[in-house]
Length: 132
Image (cartoon, rainbow, N blue to C red; front, side, top):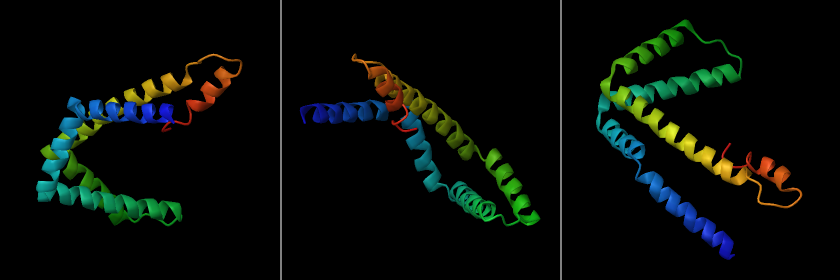
């Protein structure tokens, strides 16, 4: 039990360190700004709804209408030129890069053999368990 608690304590410390990173701070700032910007929030909401509709149609093998394709292109163009959405995309990229690096470090720690005959096999299997 002490090992589990120590692991949880370290995970909380890691979460705190991640929360202090500039990429996380910027992502939080931009998402807060998006919440206050009616146009940006509307564009993102409309795009998300359209993407859900298109995904459902694709999953059920229904045709995607020309008007839906045109709306998709129009929304993409509108989002591409909206300065706050541009900031959001950049912040998401930075945040994702940070989290990918953290995940790789975790996977490396999990996959490094700690000794024993079957530790390499266990380590190889374990690296696929963590958040993949």
